[in-house]
Image (cartoon, rainbow, N blue to C red):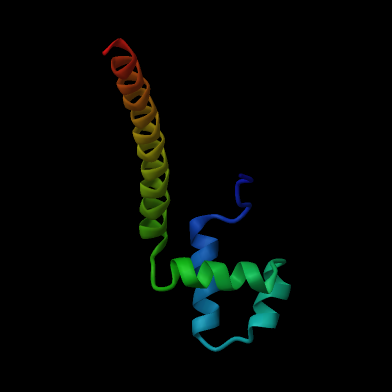
Length: 88
């Protein structure tokens, strides 16, 4: 996945401007982003501070890593059960 060229603080500022009542089309034009990107950010980061946004991203990375570990262990378990069945 491509890394964003916007920092957490920039994303928070862009979303905050929308909450303040600035038209979305103007925000997107000034920031150089699409409206879809703006609405995705608003859905994900609305009401979060930059430090909270960083913590959210760290938790998402940790969650992805743990899901990969669980998938690997599940596959190992399935292979071992298959071997046990063949021996019996």
